[in-house]
Image 1 (cartoon, helix red, strand yellow):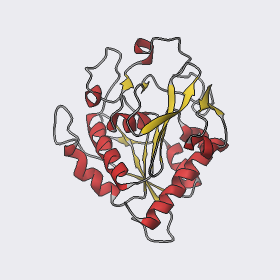
Image 2: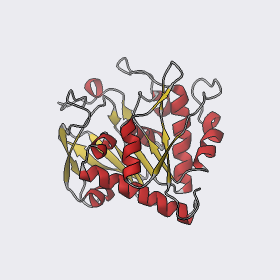
Image 3: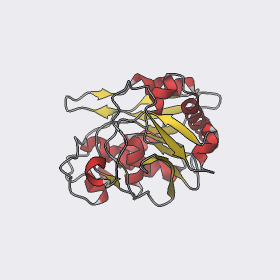
Length: 258
């Protein structure tokens, strides 16, 4: 935990490549910094060779991170191993990263138990949902069963490509002050069954879940779109989301873990 008067530390979990490199888009850092936080990129190791992935193998490492930060942000990246929600891999499943899956699932459980503010972006929202007992469409085109809008846009990363409608009375709606947003979209997986204790707080025009949030307790929001790219480009609702997250981390730092 940071000392009183200091900016809150926001832990960012980066992507991990087969070449051994950790990577994170600069926009994540910019969005946190502009909101008044200090981004901390935290690497993670392999889950002790466990196969199938075992969350316990990453728990100690996640505990080390959470003891040093005030808010946890999960970023975008590869698909999630469907083992975590009891399914075999669909033929359309993309690349998975076992090391990251194990670490992030453990971190989500610990963050929720501590009452730590939690923000998920794209894959991050999906990880939150899966870690807490929900599941996913492994591939929207193959499994959704309805006509879809374009969820993997061909426009620039920071271009708002489609609309989402926010659930009236949701925390997300209260934060951004809008009933609808235009967002960017780069995903082929999506939340199917929302985790217990969480609810859907935004949908796209085709009904796909675009945001989830914690029903009770501390700050917990996951958005399917890349709010960090929009925030870095000056989008006001996205900047409000990051400010609310960082302010929650500041309050958490002052009060300490639950």
